[in-house]
Image (cartoon, rainbow, N blue to C red; front, side, top):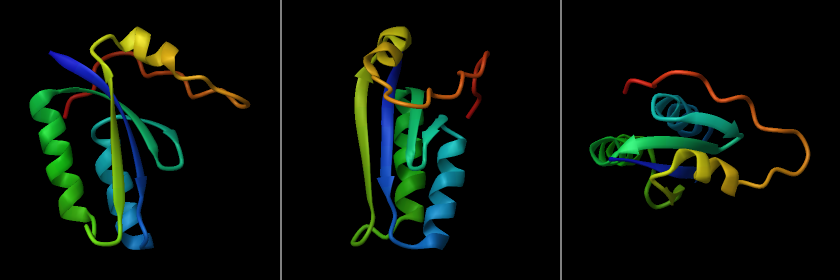
Amino acid sequence: MRRCCLVCYDIRNAKRLRRVFKTMKGYGEHWQFSIFFCVLKDIDRVRMQTDLEAEMNLKEDQVLVVDLGPNEQEARKAATIIGQSLPQADAGMVVV
């Protein structure tokens, strides 16, 4: 089963930040500077976490993963946007 999650990160080094951003583009939809919305199977979430840990400095950087549940429509509706709207979701599936 797939679950929706919000991934937010604070990376203290520009080089690591670029690598984390590139990694996250393979797993989800870029919403804001350091925020991604992902719909992942359990195994893909484990892979994402492993990939992120490989790019981060675990003593300096931080990633927050918030589980929004299995219903993508409800997860998207749970996000309140103030100001400029989010980019439109890509149609189709993302293959990781």
